[in-house]
Image (cartoon, helix red, strand yellow):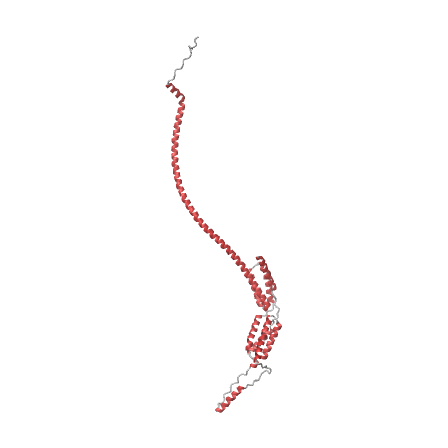
Amino acid sequence: MDDSPQDGPKPAAPDTAAQQRDRWWSKAGPAAWIAALAAVLFAWQWYDGRSEIGVLRQELAKKLADADTQSKESRTVAEQAREAVAEAQVKLGALESRLAESQNQQVALEALYQELSRNRDDWAFAEIEQSLLIASQQLALAGNVKAALIALQTADARLQRLNRPPLRGLRKAINRDIERLKAAPHVDTVAISVRLDSLIAQVSILPLAMEVRPGPEPAAANEPEGNAWTRFWRETWTELKQLVRVQQMDRADVPLLAPSQAFFLRENLKLRLIGARLALLARDGTSYKADLKAARDWLGRYYDTRNNSVAHAAATLRNLHDAEVGIEVPDISATLEAMRSHRLSRDRGAR
């Protein structure tokens, strides 16, 4: 048996180049077209994108240029703003310094005002207290109701100007004492003291009764001159009459005093008047009247009562003797106590 085949298929003949190209185009034709179209589209998009990129670059460059210009202008404005801010800060610092100085001055002025206000109140209270002390001294030492009344009215006027509610109690006490002093009998101690001082000054010049001399004789009528012998005797007789004087005294008991006794008389009369003045200040009516009575007696006994000065002094002594000086004057202890209480309360409040 022949093993080699006799009737099997024959091997295919090899393809030609054209057949291979046709088969490739038949297989790859749509893909190629698609690839070509894609390449064309890609190229167009690339070109279009490049154009847009160029335009964008131009716009970007323009915007960058504008931004650079604006940046430069901004830097200029910022520099000017920094300079303005620096200048404003300098001015602000000066204003703050002035404000601080003004505040310090305001604080100092307020402190000074408070100090002045306190000092003004202290001065006012000191003046009021001084007025009250003067009133008390005038009443206690001199019994001068008028001066005490003026001092109290001055203190009340100062309290009225202050117009402080805590001072109403003090004002009430002052007004009560003012009404009491107005109702009290008035003794013008100052006027009486002045009149006594005037009498004391006149004592040394008042003429004594023993010092009175008769007045000159009236001139003789015109007599005929006569001869020289007659004129000589007339002139001699005139000179002799001048050597001896005979005087008729109205009072037979006119005392004759030696010069030393006349001096002591005047000094004792002054002492009597001084004692009367001291009794007046002490409101001792008995001693006052006793001294003035003794002065009146001495004046009528030892002095020339026909002299105008002596007569005026005697009338003054009579008027002073009739004045009542032994009057009990009211005190202002309630007002002083109210002032003392107010001062203590102010001192406690200041602490």
